[in-house]
Image (cartoon, rainbow over all chains, first blue to last red; front, side, top):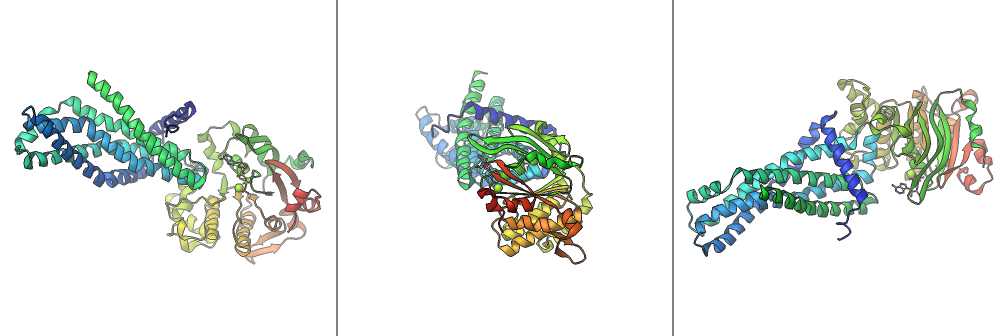
Length: 251
Length: 279
Ligand SMILES: Nc1ncnc2c1ncn2[C@@H]1O[C@H](COP(=O)(O)OP(=O)(O)OP(=O)(O)O)[C@@H](O)[C@H]1O
Ligand SMILES: [Mg+2]
């Protein structure tokens, strides 16, 4: 475990080389739009059920927890405020990113990893395509679009979950709940709530592709890269989260 | 060890691939060690050698997929060792390569696999409309035109090799590299595959590089040619034999330990080399 978190300098350098190539490809022909759409479908539509489910549960659990905590101050009617702030700023982006990292960083790493060990990556190069352009850039682009959208959905479903608790357990009226939720959110919250998933998306897609591309050693190697991709991208999601939160708190 | 440079007798002919002291290492492992040779247009070269002797890496170096640590590689007159990845694509489009494990794209159908180089190489081979016809023609060449809509996992190993050959040759490249086309196949299927390779060579004039464990494959390439009217391989004699003249190379631990014609290979007294010169 510790070995995984101790990436060597060389590894970092290779990662940033891949990332810069993938970004440069955005401005270079050819563009594989079919692959972008396909990945949006695989990652976005595919993750929708699990992301909604977890979003709903986190809203419900948070409303329950908050209601007890704030009841001491006689502020149970403010449940909407707390749920909204915590979900939009923090839990929505991080939970969604972690789910997508578990589901898709692994998927990307194992797909590209198997292509690597069966020489399909070499075949791509031999037959006239740049694997970074054909495989990495479409995944990066698809995730950058899809992860903020998934986060918005998770936030919304979470707020609905909180609302159910508010209505049926705490007897808060619908108007009161949604008003307090709406008033709680300022543009700063929304901005960080969307910036975070946008940044996380690059970590997830690029780390997944990176470990896929450097896979060696047959099927065993594919398993290893898949694990590494999930662990490393999850850790970096948290590290990045701390930085972004720090910046917004100081604003 | 024979004097390797003595083989460069025909330096006036057009060189397709020239290796000049090429070495390649993976950490401690030596994959290629001071390899030099020159392949001229229209020639057939057969590379033999035990597992791990560097045959696959040699093919990948020609293709520009692996960059050697030292030495110069010239392909179609361009020194590729100093070229960037993007500049390689023009040269790669002149080379067809069959990978050792076929390396078909398993998320695509057979038709999409064979069409891939036509659609993706920067050199336009034909218009959109003609791609399908070209693909069918290439698959018919290897007698697999009925598999168009299948995916690679539905095919047998021998069929996948044939699709690999179709994909490698659909662009009619002047140079074709076949990495272990017969490995792991029964003798009948293996001979069929070799017949397709000889057919490609003799009908299209393709310069051919063949990697193999089986000496028979080399013997076949050196002594038979594809006769179009009869539609099969025929033993070559006289002028024909000279035309299908084949060079044999035996590799060991990344070094070339033998380079010469079939007669010399069979006469070799070196225990390692003669192991590959027996049918
Ligand atoms: N990616 C790699 N990393 C480390 N070593 C490698 C790698 N690829 C090849 N090698 C080493 O390079 C040497 C040559 O390998 P190569 O694949 O060219 O052998 P080969 O002659 O094609 O063998 P075979 O007949 O089994 O296909 C071997 O010792 C192999 O272990
Ligand atoms: Mg090999």
